[in-house]
Length: 151
Image (cartoon, rainbow, N blue to C red; front, side):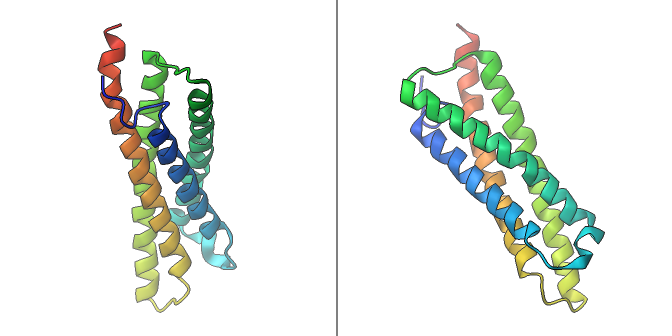
């Protein structure tokens, strides 16, 4: 059984830290904003909502992974890993959708003459990177599931 970056390994912990860092950065770039029209754009509100879900999810799983690494006891139950895979999968696509919609609105605003869209583009970039790491976690843990189901 190959466990390169599946749950409870140091490489998986690094993926979780990256998810936490990028989702937190995306959330902060969107929230520290002096634009009154921020809430007029649904895409911006959607990204903040999704990153508000991704951040605690990633922090919680990073803490679980750190605990697993320190005690060297892995929660390798098929139901636990299935929930993690499903959560990562759903959140990766939600954050990808939020990043794409935010960039779309930012490009439209730039075309309309707005010049203060760099923060939105940066936030969307951070959300995309978080989405990529979350999907990578999904694939690594999904690969672990068949070996857990056979036990």
